Amino acid sequence: MKALVLSSGGVDSTTALALAIEKYGKENVVALSVSYGQKHDKELRAAKAVAEYYGVEQLFLDLSLIFQYSNCSLLQQSDQEIPEESYAQQIEKTGGTTPVSTYVPFRNGLFLSAAASVALSMECSVIYYGAHADDAAGAAYPDCSQAFHDAMNQAIYEGSGKQLRIEAPFVGKTKADIVALGLKYHVPYQLTWSCYEGKEEPCGKCGTCIDRAKAFAANGVSDPAICEK
Image (tube, rainbow, N blue to C red):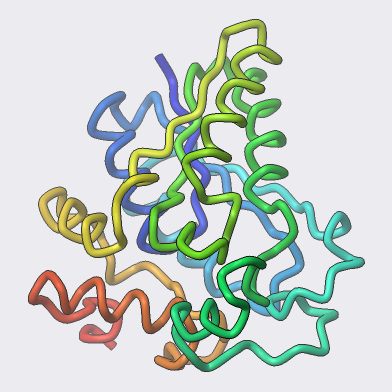
């Protein structure tokens, strides 16, 4: 069996990549990284470094044109500022009924659909992606939820002639749980990038920086991506 892993260069997808390699062997794993019109390429460079570290084949896909009409704060054309507050604070403002401003419209749905075509072409049997429970909380990122995963898995399984399925190993886990698992597998977190800003150093203020810092702190360790700089 072969696995295709959606690899963004962050903590979650890099840990998912490590799990796929552990299960299938690096020779049977392909990493797929997607450009979607984000404001910087730091995460794509991190994904490349991670793929090189593990010695897996890596593919790149540009889907930026699809998001050209979106005003999501992560995208180049957006006039919105990236919030400098935790997801919990953002969810409180929305009442937990609408996605946060850094939600890219149906991104995981698009990525998984595109990945399904690539995976089938490369004779892969499974797609891994790093959705987790923290992101799904309060409708912040609805395409990270268990319900979304189940629906997409069924659609891809049926649409592929029952040749392909998707797996989200962390969909019921927190980011702290992911880091705990990754530390056991010696995941190279020093190579990863999570910050929504594209500066030389992580801003430490955006939702994903705050989430990441809490995850490492919960495991009693410092973030190696910051420590080694």
